[in-house]
Image (cartoon, rainbow, N blue to C red; front, top):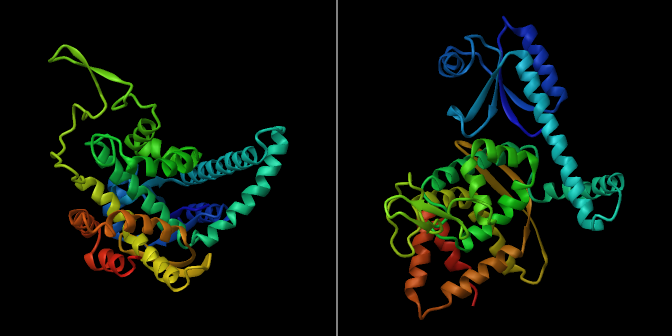
Length: 354
């Protein structure tokens, strides 16, 4: 089970601690032992736990203070671990069904679909290693996911869409990931709905189901005594800063910084290898880094020419159109805003293809 937890026990409760510890090991929960120091007791146990006793499991959850949910008592710990296991089992069942449904068009019995899906799922699961999704990176990916939906929630308190008050290609570009990959998967879907309901509302808004800020919805304006469309309107409770033409909200920049911090080095390496051997479909593997707080992990993943193709589109539309220098300057400024200038701009200019 892919959950990097912290387990806090002491000698007084060692018997109970061994029960929980053994259960988590058999269930495959990744956890670290925390020293039961007085600082931990004062900072985490006393304010967050039900009673002032040490036998505590800390599960990563971005919406909570300190980034962890506190679970106390052996039975509660085992119960939560059991529920997490059930969630992942349900997750695999749905994914297997989806794989088989796509392969057969649904023209098979449920038992046949699940058998086909299990084989297809195994093939797709093998791709995780190629993408750099392995036990050492999974905890950081999970932490980044919680941080991402936290930043998005803060943004959607002010704006209905990622660039402000109206839908753009930025929303369309992200909805595949958030609806298809995350919103239809029972585990991340549960996390989004329970920790970041504003993100879930944005998913429904972009797919045309949300009530507020949809093109097909109206609300009553009490002052004007009339109906008005909600599209392009702020929430009544929102107090965002006014945006100039083409200005990107600061809350959106924070989201972009998180996403680009680890991706820019991947893109730079991809461009470098593609430029060296442009005709080769498989560029091989490279070492990449993931960051969450002060923690860093490194692993290997395969590179793909798709990133170069996407980069070429940016180059063709922005950096090759010298008759519009202000467009290039605006793009340079945005890159500077979301990351350090040397990393974000130098390689763009170096690998601009003519």
